Amino acid sequence: MSSTLQVLLFLSLPFILALLILKSSFSSTKSNKNLPPSPPKLPLIGNLHQLGSSPHRALQAMAQTYGPLMLIHLGTVPVLVASSVDAAKEIMKTHDLIFSSRPHLNIPDKLFYACKDIAFSKYGEYWRQVKSIAVLHLLSNKRVQSYQHVRDDEMTTMMEKIRRANGSAVNLSELFISLTNNVVCRVALGKAYEGRKFKNLLDRFMELLGCFSVGSYIPSLRWVDRLSGLERKADKVAKEFDEFLEVVLDEHVNKNDTCVESRDLVDILLEFQRDNDKGFRLERDMIKALIVDIFSAGTDTTFTSLEWATCELLRHPRAMKQLKKEVNEIGQGRPMITEDDLDKMPYLKAVFKEGLRLHTPLPLLVPRESTEDIKLHGYDIQSGTQVLINAWAIARDPSVWEEPEEFRPDRFLNSPIDYKGFHFELLPFGAGRRGCPGIQFAMVVNELVLANLVYKFDLALVGEEGMDMSETNGITVHKKCPIVVSATPCS
Image 1 (tube, one colour):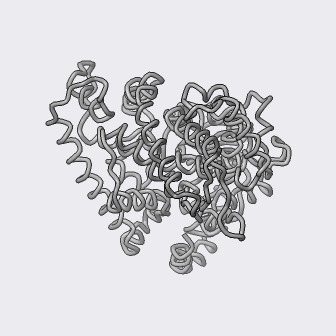
Image 2 (cartoon, helix red, strand yellow):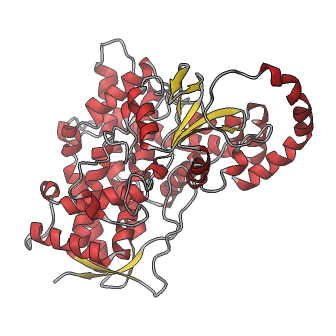
Image 3 (cartoon, rainbow, N blue to C red):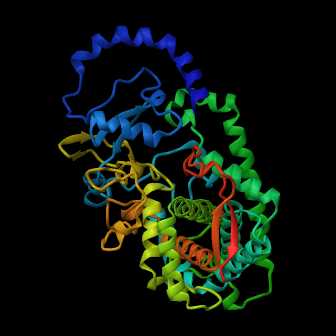
């Protein structure tokens, strides 16, 4: 974002003097509304220059000065930032309906077929229909359980790759990415799509989702996105993904296999399209948008959560020892930990809760937008205000968490706090109407893989430099350097 902001600062200089001169003449018409506290802003770019490469960290620091509910300006767009449990609860529960829409963002608009997906579509009847389809037909408990054989297959394949390494260096991050990608591909499309070309397409897709689009926040400068090549890159990736999905859809339409047990998500969506007589027509682009949603959410955040949890265990031998003790007691020498065993493992679940607390996959969640004027904590919030929930800052709030920077899974052993959207201290998947509907799909993969990894192998970091905890930039915060370990089979 920094190079783009340098360009914007340069472009804004001619406007600054004129705007400062005009400021006094308009001061008498200043609104009487009681707006939330705001940091000083620059003309044209607002507070964009203050976000840096890690917006969640910058906003946390600003909140310490301006409070847990503050109003910033990203370009010409007013943005309400919530950084406390109470503020998040007001937005995502008390006034959830008013804050359930999404702002228009140029890059998601290109990648998700004019936002015909679930995550980025505006709140309304269309969103309700596609969310219902996903919850009832794609992500229900029964449907998630029906793909157990896929998870078992891919997990077994990964364990075999580690075993064949025979104690030499293993890149766990690569294996996690491959496993989650294969699971999502097989569940969604019916078969795995490995290979460098497909992986590169997914990487470019996720990178674009995390890019800053000038035109989304300063519409008059949308040409900057064209000049920088951002729009061209987004168009190219969208075209490549569309061509890939067209082939997939044609294969499914023309295939002869009608076995119910072998149906994947594309089959289910096409069946819904054919058989639905309730007045809602599921068009081809809608199907593709839903599949893209499942890829972007199902692959990226899943392996990220697994990677950070494993990383923290390697940094904290006592926690690793405690988890190994639990899985050994449950496994009792059997070849594998099964999905039926997972609910008997409170420490495993505590490890993931603590990992998600310290390393919230989407630190600012997906932006929301208010649809009405509303009073919030005594402040006037105008309709059309964009809203960011700093879930990362809330999860490290010292008024909520004891020793918030420390990895302590034990804190969850006697705590009712969970990540499913009912406890606003922990919001890795959001909450309310716009909470992630795929929590169970993601977490059963994570728990199964980590339980078996610890059950089957003793892991040790390769090298003497320790664990690099650097983060990448983007909508999802990944670990910058891969986890490389030696894995010795447990006797």
